[in-house]
Image (cartoon, rainbow, N blue to C red; front, side, top):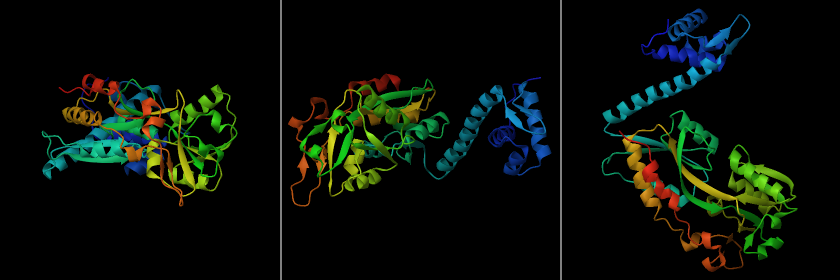
Length: 352
């Protein structure tokens, strides 16, 4: 007979352990209890729920659809329980509140500095926990409650997330300084036809990775076997060694410079790196709402400084080459928050 009585943590831990191990031996070892104890606890849990979470026999354990849905929410409950303890510990130590914010390792340094500089009068002792990760892990962190907010480039559509566009910028292409394309101030995909492409690995950002190759297919651009990298400095080294040309975000191009490598912006109607502020749609934290409001207000005032405009070209015997605003596409002369960012006031996490 199902019951409405809240489930104790021990039941949630047992269900999660068995779902991840799919073995009573593994679950028992993780929980530091006997296999019969795990089995008894699962039987009690299923009796209280009124439905089966696992189909099991002597040979294997298979999680049911109901069990999969249960375990997903059970993990959230366990995470929130841990955060409740952390919040209590912070309060006991004089820290009134904290936010855990995820960000891409390729985040624009200006946006990153703006994020760290936000101060809230109502929360003078606010502590920010920053976590850098790739886009898929940032989305997962939001959905599981591990992150309160995240700055993500092109998050995949998800009804459980609220997202607001902050900025957008073109891709940039790193090329050897002796490459014929150095004479061009901006590049197109057509210019890269026949080149060896050095790309960020798909696990860094699946959507952007697939977008680049989809656009190449749409335009009929043939390229040589691509080289996959995880970090911008790897790409720059390959370019310096004349292996090929590398696709970069603006932040990567700004952070990394190397002799023998020039950088040019890529002009394409769809290949833009769009940055979004994301949170769970059911996030009702007043603190998160206040932080979002203050951050968006600051971000609307951001203008890229002239010395940070690309392309960048380090040559030992020539002056530093910078693209002046008059040579840039009109939309890239000034990177500010788009009008859509102002919609955050109506789309911010709700507060009670």
